[in-house]
Image 1 (tube, rainbow, N blue to C red):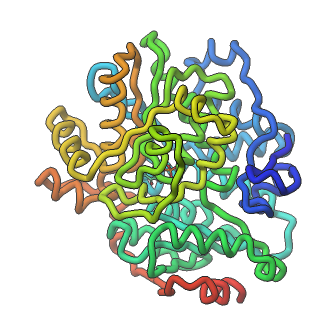
Image 2 (image 1 turned 180 degrees about the vertical axis):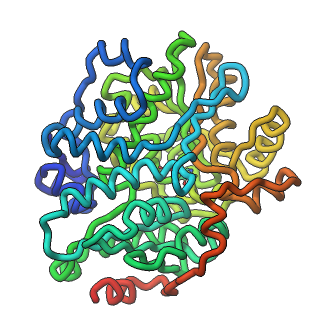
Length: 431
Ligand SMILES: *Cc1c(COP(=O)(O)O)cnc(C)c1O
């Protein structure tokens, strides 16, 4: 399998190069040249398979012989060593709980797979691999957890100052060792821009081996398709078409779902929901795509004004607005609406985090408007305790902090502060 750049001016490359490079030389994102189809027999027996078995089947179709079967199998098994249940919330509405991994956000799936694949491809390299990752809160810790203490790899996490939850900050800044947490005086978009600038900096790349751990890296996109198949395996017996609602920021998660659908997964429709940072829902409504600076919301992991994976979605839909709209509906919700949903769903007995609440709202809205007879799945992307302050303030009651998260609270933060100035970041990395 060859991978091409969405900007179409860089050469096509093989997977190891795409993974270790992160961003293509022309600034584009890598995409598989052709999308493999899974056979009908795979879907007929999918309910008899385990999550790692499904993940392995999907990964090997996409990755082919770039990784030996036993190595790939082990990577998938280590990635998916926690449950991803589809939990019934109300009639025909299920929460796909993606937060049972070590850092309790869906990013664990992509980050664990990517870190292992990267370490495998990098094993014969004598130079240190420097991984740069911009985070709106959850990516950084998932990536840190995946790479912590991996020999030959150093991680730089860029996060926006004062714009991540206190617990998220703990999860970013308390690793030490090969993980460096850098607080940028700016927004997530500034962090993402600086990370992309570093990756595209010829001088920096001459002296250093650099890569990206953001969802621009194809190694994160591939595993983010696994759990859509797994949701289908769990809900297939309901006999209704599936719709997925994905709370979106950089649109890597939903692009994983689109990839699954392109490989043959029967999905009736996708819904992309956002907070006030709604450039993609606006594009779907108006056919005009206009990025803008992000604004801060209570679902902060989705505070993205210039979503990277828009470029990949355009490829999947041949840059055709109509085709885009046939497969995806977009909705945006205010913080107030998000809080109301958290309260009303809690009254039904299910605790949502702010991101899951945005997804729940979009699913309800779509089902109401379309009157589709469908099984609706919204992706619950983080554990509510990660956003404890918002959840407690909204519901007026305490949230229990799981063991995994409590461990971070006791640890000491180690933070490097930098202004929103690329040159200073460059000097730091180039040492
Ligand atoms: C990152 C994140 C999102 C957004 O995912 P994208 O792939 O960037 O669209 C949603 N919810 C949570 C909790 C996240 O951490």
